[in-house]
Length: 204
Image 1 (tube, rainbow, N blue to C red):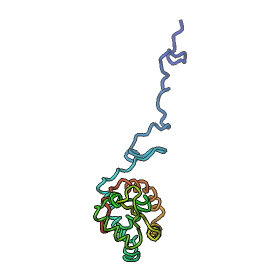
Image 2: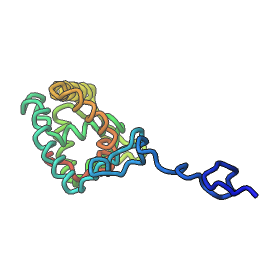
Image 3: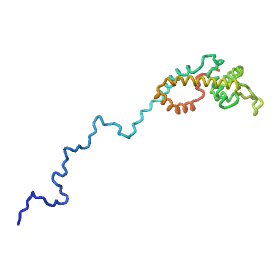
Image 4: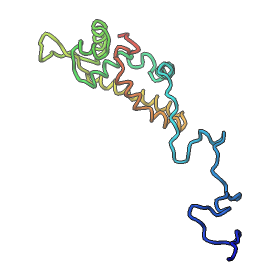
């Protein structure tokens, strides 16, 4: 009988491994271990986490300060348009947008007291910017409506204000202008939800 040579090659038994077949190749790099430089990094194609939303109190204070410094520069010289105060301009704007209305309805829209609104209407009437007409639904009441001079004045003031604001915007960088444009929907929603009683001036 011929003795078996333990070093001779032959069929491998099922489940057995060839010596050295599964040994790692020193030249082949293995999986990288995350280090301090790669931990927390954003993978290519993934979305970076959004920055934390600041507290509403901080937003309110910064917005208030910005408006406090911005708005006075947008108004014309006092007396330039017959001493048209912000409240009087708001009254003309309400009549221009919503049409003739009673004094009580105007007071509600402006968020100011009825006696204050009545005094303001008297001043606007004396300036020729509004007129009183009979209310067809109640002959004892009257409606307040814009006159042609009042409407022309309102549109002139709005145009001048927009021109001053446009000049301010042009001093911003392109990135700042794009950021301002992006913020417009939020500012418009904020304006729509603001209680009219928070108007900065109640001086008739």
